[in-house]
Amino acid sequence: MIFPPHCKYVGSATSTPYGNRAYFLSRYLVRETADGTEVLEVETDPDGTGLMRRVLSTRVLATGDEVYRYPDRVNVQDRTFLVGAAMRSGHRCTIFTGHGEQTTFVLDPDLSGFLRIHVYDITPPRPHLSATLLDLEKTGLFGDLEVIFEHHIRDIREIEADVYPCHAAGFPRTLDADTLRAGDRVAGCQTARDLVRECYGEGIMVESICPLEAVESEPFIVRCCRSERAGIERWNGRFGAVVHWGASSRDIAEAVWRVTAAWREQGDEGSGR
Image (cartoon, rainbow, N blue to C red; front, side):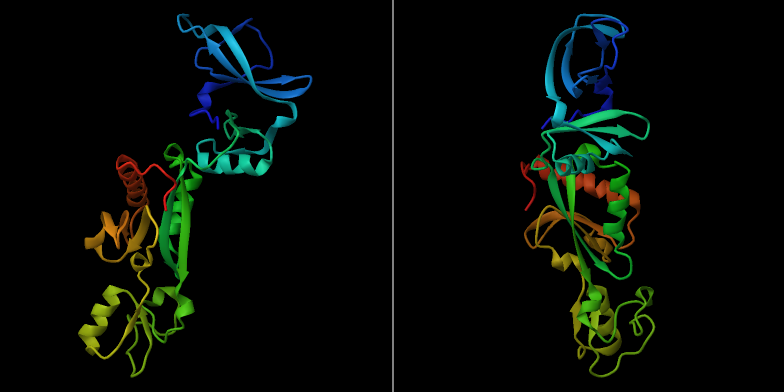
């Protein structure tokens, strides 16, 4: 796959007002020809001076029916989205235009080298960790990390419990607002277990809804209400990051960077498992 690391390396060559010269940062050129759009790799004179440098060599990377122009303006920093869109296009090379008219392209798209991070969360209410990552991803914040988020969201309504942890999710009976009755089926996490034990003794069982206990793949990022668990750690033999239940967008983004760097530093370059 060829995917320029930044749009500043991709130039336009619809005309040649300065002869056989190109902008000194250009490594690739997109050019319109009578046979359609073509993408070139160019080498400029490394010993040259000034903004425009003599072109020493060119190589056609894709041309004609191999090239597809994506119809919509995109965030050129959202690299995972761009590679995925290029794969869906059905063409060897997809050219993208940014909201600021920047140009980039993906040639022979392939996501196999991207790191797959497993996201564990629950709903309802809003799965805060998963939803925040989706929002941040759209900004291109994680573009240079080249990661794919695989979301594992458990719907706790499927437990069909009598009592749930908190009224924020809209449940009719919750631990923070109602008294338990004999025989109640309770859904909750470790904090809920501690509360039930403290207030009702040992006779009531609590079915776990903790996302951390659902972790099966690595590297992972997961949400947990126990602040002492936050950080980079191994859980049940799996490596990942734990963020607090109400973590800020910054905390979540930093956890992604930290777990990605730590995973790659220990030599686990693959797509996760």
